[in-house]
Image 1 (tube, rainbow, N blue to C red):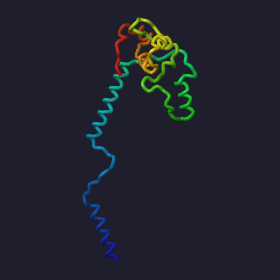
Image 2 (image 1 turned 90 degrees about the vertical axis):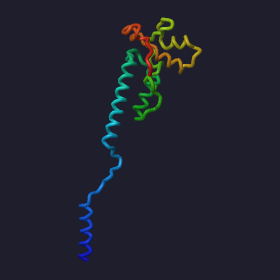
Image 3 (image 1 turned 180 degrees about the vertical axis):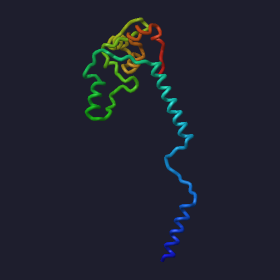
Image 4 (image 1 turned 180 degrees about the horizontal axis):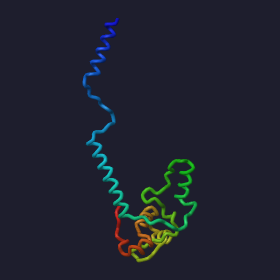
Length: 154
């Protein structure tokens, strides 16, 4: 019996001293990690560039407590989960900013969302809201002048 156990010990010792290749799952090579880091850096730079090219003006006017965004914020806080009512692309709905004034270069006039909607009554509100959000705010036009009307791409 001692010979049998001694044989097992020798086999275990031999296995431990033998060089092995160990494979680890989900571990990336240094080259792959470097590529992933470069991609992450590239994405951050692109997002920073887009943010600089498309500045957002902070809205300082009144907010409606029954607006979609405010309702969504309350539901998100209460349920501790996203409810899907927030505007994904721009972060706000035009109705949420009733006092915001934007400048339309096509007719050189300043509009609120209600006035702009009445002017373009023949267009669907979804398409019209996208056009509204592309117009520069009055505050931005006062700050930048004519350069505020240069189209920014997203």
